[in-house]
Amino acid sequence: MKPSAESELVLPESFLMGAATSAHQVEGNNVSSDWWALENSSDTFVTEPSGDAADSFHRWPEDMDLLRDLGFNAYRFSIEWARIEPERGRVSKAAVAHYRAMVRGALERGLTPVVTLHHFTSPRWFGEHGGWAAPDAAELFAAYTRTALDVLRAGVRHVATINEPNMVALMYAIRRHAAEHGWSGAAGAGENGAAAGGLGAVEPAADITQSLIRAHRAASTVLKAADLGLQVGWTVANQVYQAEPGARRTADAYARPREDVFLEAAREDDWIGVQAYTRHLIGPGGPLPVPEGAETTLTGWEFYPEALGEAVRHTARLLPGIPILVTENGIATGDDERRIAYTARALASLADAMRDGIDVRGYLHWSALDNYEWGTYRPTFGLIAVDPRTFARTPKQSAHWLGALARSRRIPGAPAGVPALRLG
Ligand code: BGC
Image (cartoon, rainbow, N blue to C red; front, side, top):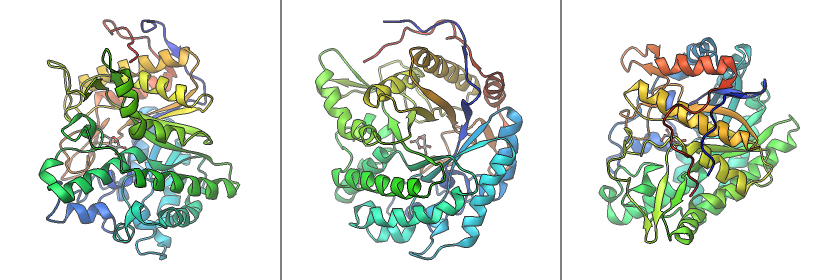
């Protein structure tokens, strides 16, 4: 196995280096969304509602100023279907204008906008209609996408249709499971954690997987037909399933419905979004807990930065020739030095994959701001701290460090003591 290379990697001018957020997690008061309804219902796993979040709905110019000043050249954010179409067929012109202003605002600051159309939240009416289980879900999403073209026309090139469809389909399965067994069995099963927790046997709902793939294709058709030169993709949660000895087949079978099927659905796309945080060990009997004694983060995930390089390699194997954008990578920690250590190693593993010829076009750190982590504010992923009372923003040391790297267009070699790359 090749050890991590030691020399630095010089990035091309066009390489996107920035940070990411999603609307619901930072905007605040996303009152027409299904998530808002879930957070404020009594039958929920949510421990804390999103409320005002980081108030980025009003403070986005300040957020973008900070990202520019730190040295970044890209910002990934999502536009909110629940604001754009708060009631079925009723478009809010004000919401469209709001997001157009954000796109223009990013461009004016020299930040390339990478825009996600759907990041976990849907309008409440869509949820009540059956959500992704509704037979016409793909057409409804395509209709919203048609409306969203007015936002994209303001100067967007990179569009992601749906964020982590594999996690969306998994969440449906978890909700169905909870409907039968109650939320206590599903508590804490948020997103990436679900595979490692007690719900390891739950797999994405197959009907939802198919519906999301149909929706992605329908939306891509709309986006391409608009002839705006849009580069279309979607973003997948890469779980980095590592097979223990004798568990290769089990790991492959485990990965298929949870990840690979979603990657393969991107074969016709312009790019694929890789989102990696940690690894998941698979034994002959299925998923294993985090190894004893391993450092864990505020989400309970193993501190395993090399997940990024491995995720990129796995994705490139399944999608040869499709350019990769790292659309999320980061760590929930209250110790900013660990954030720097994690990100340095993650970037070194990425650089190593790029040196081996994998076509990576950008790195967008999750997250620009401390934000609402789907049920709680406790896990802090941000490069920039946000005071929950005053909403004052304070860039952390990690933000200055990563911004300086972005400015230098260089990824340093692997820090000392980094273990050799292990491919499962
Ligand atoms: C999601 C983000 C989330 C992050 C950390 C991804 O699953 O796209 O919305 O905050 O990972 O859990």
